Amino acid sequence: MALPVHIQETAEWASQTFELRIPGHVSYETLQHLLSERLKTLINTDFQQFVFLLYRIDVSEKKVQAIISEATAALAEPYNEIAALIIERQLQKIITRASFRQQPPDDDEEKW
Image 1 (cartoon, rainbow, N blue to C red):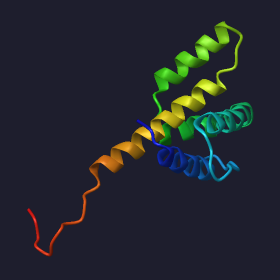
Image 2 (image 1 turned 90 degrees about the vertical axis):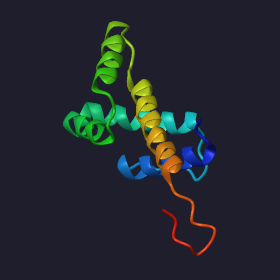
Image 3 (image 1 turned 30 degrees about the vertical axis):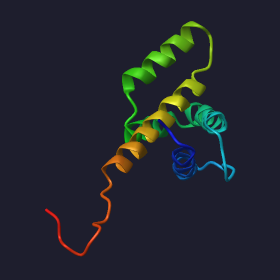
């Protein structure tokens, strides 16, 4: 489950990765909206960069293609759903890293 601190860390990451201006404390919905607006610009002006970022972030290509296909069929915009995929993937990474962080030993002894 994503905690507010995870959302903030994701917002900082998105700010750097997508060159976004994000307010200090942001909700999931606000982050998704800001990212979807950036994706709209990126997809329409530099699709190759968009694909590169998806690859680097490790978002499922099949999921993105399915969203784009559904949006095309329904004459809708896919940006919000793709933004949600990106945010969820980054949250997964943050939560996984946090679960594997080791706590410092309680004493000076080396533990095996």
